[in-house]
Length: 212
Image (cartoon, rainbow, N blue to C red):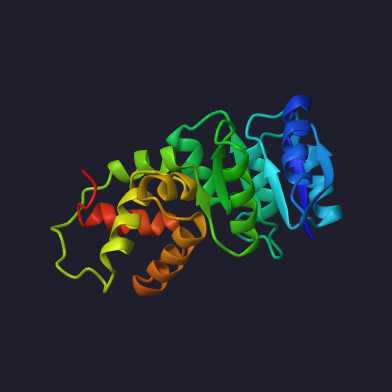
């Protein structure tokens, strides 16, 4: 079982996330915290597989709690996915530099929340597609490279849609293929590039100006 701790100052959010996590056959909620201090204390005591952490919380904000749980110098870091209403670039960069395994907006939907938890457990990182696209748009891409890394035409189709911020389900719908097929293509793409996660896949596409 994937053990999840939920930290958010809004009871309704904790309840909603708890229902989503509890509905998964391989996940369970092991604790809830309504402020940053309690989140750090519970995480250190319970050692969950993943902490879902809000940013703006009383007593101790989420970014500082994240630094204490997963930041540089932490001997035994805990996997943390930041889930917030605020998508400021400053928050994103601070969260990722302090060891976050993901950064989601609260309106991302249940599927992406579950996907982020699974990604964190597997050592990957998932960022809300809209944030990924905005960050990558700030890149000053080099001249397009001719090498397509051996990707097939269908794999390139998937890569372009990842770079546009689409989820696996949305990619499947647009290409008229199964979600499992999308995941298979992405696994192949990660090996060929190589890339650790969909953020790096998207960056590769943007650098080669594959996205208009």
